[in-house]
Image (cartoon, rainbow, N blue to C red; front, side):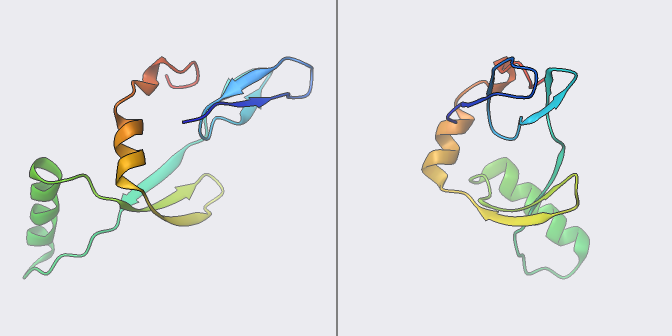
Length: 100
């Protein structure tokens, strides 16, 4: 993910990644998102559908369709590009200062 240089009020500059655009007392803060996988399964019961999802997550490719809701309750449906998603997943993003 490409870093974005931002200049918050107060003059200190911050390199931000992804959704890390909030500031609290001059310190970068991360936003919170609820991410829901949106996949359809044909099944006899809700439990079977959940088990099919579990099976896909453990044995298949990661899903690409998501519904993401931010703190303001604004929802966005996203479909990721597998190549870009795999590239992003190959990097340890916990090393980013705001990802704690």
